[in-house]
Image (tube, rainbow over all chains, first blue to last red; front, side, top):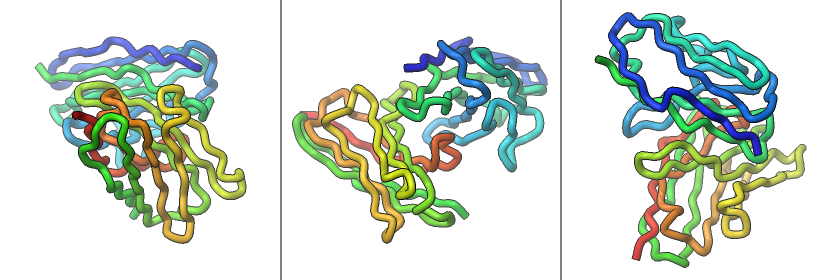
Length: 108
Length: 117
């Protein structure tokens, strides 16, 4: 199975800060890497597909990059509504699909 | 508008069974793989399994933690996917989500399964 390691597990930042979350795969997944945002009590929402493709309706302050084993989710200017948890997921292997452990983002 | 609506969750004793449903609308259900993902309270996301579409022979795959106990099926005539859970354990307590496709681009609201004596 492909293991996904996210870091940090949590972070606290000010509104307007640039925030970076990293995700590392235990083996190459090409660009089959997706990022999700989850607010408390809600289902996850797909933010970025295929490592860097922003989903419709997602603010442009979110961006993704990387390929192979190392990936990054960046929020260029953190906003209050960005608080929540973020997960990476590899879809290179659909059996099993695997998620990172998550990153909890808090606003200072 | 794509919608996925799960139902069938509830309280069940250890060793018991439960069958979840996921009704889809707003897209061509028969052409999509459907996945199930679960989340225990305060924990991360765990993939449960998936069923592919008819052209892919309705192939199924499962996480090691549920293989042999859970079965995924679908009824394309009713735009519905199912997750049948047997021999339930307390560790299966979670919110269960159905999602569309391997990239899980759409998620249902989830249904809570509680396994407790």
